[in-house]
Image 1 (spheres, rainbow, N blue to C red):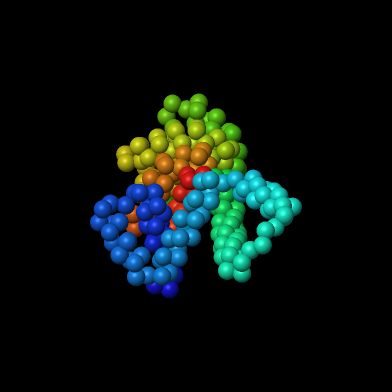
Image 2: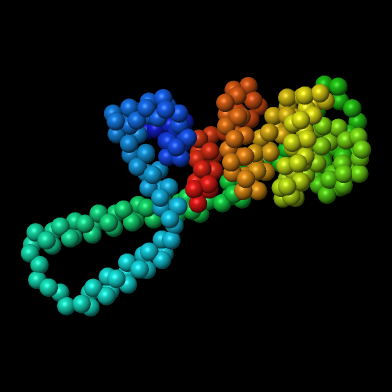
Amino acid sequence: MDKPSHDMTEVLVRYLDGELTGSEEEDLERQLAVDPALQQEYENLRLSRESIRYYGLKEKVAGVHGQMMKELKTPVRKMSSAKKIIRYTIAVAASVVLLVGGFLAYQFYTLSSNKIFASNYQSYELGNLRDGNEQPLSAVEQAYQAKDYRQVVKLVKQSDSATVKETFLAAMSNEELANNPAAIIQYKKVIAGSGTQGSNIIKDAAEYYLALAYLRNKDYDYALELLRKIKDDPSHLYHSKITGKLTLQLKMLKWR
């Protein structure tokens, strides 16, 4: 294998988290035993995980620096050439581990739920919900089209007969307003009611945007569960949006 795929990366992450079944774990370990590229990917992920979990790089570097300065000021005893080589070799190896670990820790520690959300979120276009039997826009739809998100939320809240579509638009409006808890509640209503009133377009959209609302709300387990559900369903409208990179980034946030 030249380079592990996103799917294999996710399998490795699940392996590190102890989430694989017995047979899956055995299959992966057999692959690791014969695939150097996969072994390297595993080591990079393991190192990243540990670096992130025990993150305190600045403090550690400062401590090492202080110890080095202290040793430099201490009278040096004579040392044999063999011992010098061993010490220098260990020092170089430790420096490489620290640099690699520091780089990977920085790369992943600078991730945030807001950054991942922003890179995967796109405002929903009202036209995506229109069908062949187009009716005049409702007040809720007009407000959403005008990007008056507060008015959308207000109208749906005041209505006793909001449709699934209007509830979805209220959920999207709350997501635009960064009101994650309210968006989550409304997306759940949409998913529960779409079987009777709506279409797969609304249901699929609600599931994807609910996962993003969970992400920004830092409910990473719920977000991952929903993203995996979408990824496992090739017929889902948002199936192609769920990449190994996205699920790996969420895992990194969990590890922190």
